[in-house]
Image (cartoon, rainbow, N blue to C red):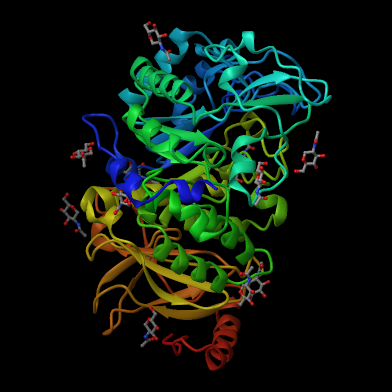
Amino acid sequence: MRTSIIGAAVATVLAFADVGSAANATEWKSRSIYQVMIDRYARTDGSTDATCEMHEFCGGTWKGLLNNLDYIQGMGFTAIQISPIVKNIDDDTSAGAAYHGYWPVDNYALNEKFGTEQDFKDLVDELHKRDILLMVDVVVNHMAQAFDNVVPPKVDYSKFNPFNDEKYFHSYCNVTDWENATNYQDCWLYPYGIALADLATEKTEVADEMNKWVKELVANYSIDGLRIDAAKHVNDEFLPAFVEASGVFALGEVLTGKPDDMCRYQTLGLLPGMPNYLDFYKLNLAFNGGSMVNLTDIRNEGASACNDTLALGSFIENHDMPRFASLNDDLALAKNAMAYVLLNDGIPTVYQGQEQHFKGNGTPFNREPLWDSKYNKSAPLYTLTSTLNKVRNNAIKRSSDYISSPSKTLWADVNHLCLSKGPYGSQVVFCINNKSSKGDSYQVSVGGFQANDKVVEVLTCKTSTADATGNVTMYMRRGEPKAYVLASVLNGTGICNTTVEDGLEQGNGAGALGATTSMLLAAVIGSVVVLLA
Ligand SMILES: *[C@@H]1O[C@H](CO)[C@@H](O)[C@H](O)[C@H]1NC(C)=O
Ligand SMILES: *[C@@H]1O[C@H](CO)[C@@H](O)[C@H](O)[C@H]1NC(C)=O
Ligand SMILES: *[C@@H]1O[C@H](CO)[C@@H](O)[C@H](O)[C@H]1NC(C)=O
Ligand SMILES: *[C@@H]1O[C@H](CO)[C@@H](O)[C@H](O)[C@H]1NC(C)=O
Ligand SMILES: *[C@@H]1O[C@H](CO)[C@@H](O)[C@H](O)[C@H]1NC(C)=O
Ligand SMILES: *[C@@H]1O[C@H](CO)[C@@H](O)[C@H](O)[C@H]1NC(C)=O
Ligand SMILES: *[C@@H]1O[C@H](CO)[C@@H](O)[C@H](O)[C@H]1NC(C)=O
Ligand SMILES: *[C@@H]1O[C@H](CO)[C@@H](O)[C@H](O)[C@H]1NC(C)=O
Ligand SMILES: *[C@@H]1O[C@H](CO)[C@@H](O)[C@H](O)[C@H]1NC(C)=O
Ligand SMILES: *[C@@H]1O[C@H](CO)[C@@H](O)[C@H](O)[C@H]1NC(C)=O
Ligand SMILES: *[C@@H]1O[C@H](CO)[C@@H](O)[C@H](O)[C@H]1NC(C)=O
């Protein structure tokens, strides 16, 4: 098995070099990523009434994205990740068309379905003018050809550029054993409608060509970072040399919920970062009948297994997984999940449509065209994202230690997780809960500040004053998440220009009732403070 081939000696030799002016890990850690699937983001003409057949091309383009960057910047994102850019198969297979970009045939040609080379360069220029970094998804595991489901697939290798010969590929076998690395790395993925001819990336000539290619790609198009598709399905040794050749930071896809399986990619120096699938599964579980303790546990396991959780991508949705709202469409739960993604350690990554509370389940239904939302900037998750990205960006601007300090757990129980991130003065204290919009009203005392600090809860713009122990009273209701910062750090930021004093809800007799409920709860919940009102 591959695990035994790569040893400590290899890992030391393959340590990453942070190179020159290209965006390195430190730079990426300070960013917040919006994930775009080009075919589904925006059409060149900006039309929002086009219907979309989910297995086919729907008409999104690089120019469509260029014309709609305000929507992304309005949410405070400072980077985007886009779907693969090279030429794919043209066929409409029984598994659909290559609208997603993961079925390459020519690594040296751009995908004309998404526009011209000039369109792509214009997009990159505009991104950089706006100080938005560009992460491009790259496919290194395979080249693709339509096939008729008769195995072994009859592949015409001469159609691939540059890997135009059978000798560059593994001979056909179907991945059958997801626990056996030789099997899931050397055999072919997904044998229906499309043959994903599996590149023999352990061969020097294949690896050398890939390294030359990625170096050129990054240079030709001023790419700032990579997402490496199916990184777990190529041989270990291929990855560090590829990342080094690219000269930029990379998040490699390692789809596993097991800390040791994922974190070895970091501790052995194979990849600088990975999307954080550890948190992903347990975050989902906590909002689907599980417990916040599951999330707290995996955070601790991840922190000891990985050597840099700050370089992981923090996410709850992507183009491969059922949307959060397809499991439970309660809006308060989605707000809590979004708050965790944006304020957690690591690089927040939000997949297009998450901010519109899209509900698609399995692929391709989780790839709804964003224009269905009419790009509504008043959508509740859009405004929440905007506020929390601004809060995070402000914290980073005030102190570069914000991104380099792992968050501290203030309080956790089955329903709540409260964390404090960043050094005193630029800290963000936040609490997520899984009570849903049916959640009751109660009060919880949470720390993270100093005596008498004036603080603002940024999602409601309510102020309060920390007590003599530096604790703040959270007025919990309807399952909403909470995020507190020192009031002094908001001056001039445009966040919460107007604030009101926090307290019990007033009007409709709810105040009195709320107080009674809270007092009853105070008796049964450990860390609830006695009412002051
Ligand atoms: C990473 O890039 C930043 C500029 O974006 C630079 O200030 C920093 O020194 C670089 N870090 C390393 C380790 O090269
Ligand atoms: C490939 O393997 C999967 C199990 O991973 C199995 O369900 C499928 O039938 C196999 N397909 C072929 C064409 O052998
Ligand atoms: C792992 O998979 C490879 C390739 O399919 C196979 O040759 C090998 O026997 C498998 N090993 C085990 C332990 O099953
Ligand atoms: C990069 O640009 C050069 C010069 O135009 C071209 O020869 C090369 O094929 C390009 N490489 C890639 C990967 O696009
Ligand atoms: C993690 O380990 C790898 C491999 O030893 C090393 O290159 C990298 O610098 C380490 N990262 C941190 C943050 O310690
Ligand atoms: C929240 O956690 C509790 C306790 O583990 C659990 O009973 C409840 O189902 C969870 N809520 C949701 C929406 O999953
Ligand atoms: C989630 O946590 C509960 C205890 O709170 C535990 O019983 C359960 O096994 C955990 N589930 C998973 C999948 O980790
Ligand atoms: C945009 O979202 C807001 C908040 O949900 C809603 O009130 C409004 O009707 C939406 N606008 C459009 C055009 O859908
Ligand atoms: C202060 O908050 C912490 C959680 O951060 C809690 O454990 C503690 O009980 C609170 N102290 C008081 C006096 O309520
Ligand atoms: C906010 O900043 C302005 C000047 O930029 C200053 O006059 C004012 O006192 C500040 N307010 C607070 C609450 O710090
Ligand atoms: C808050 O103030 C900023 C200027 O600091 C301004 O640009 C913004 O429009 C204001 N927002 C609201 C909602 O009033």
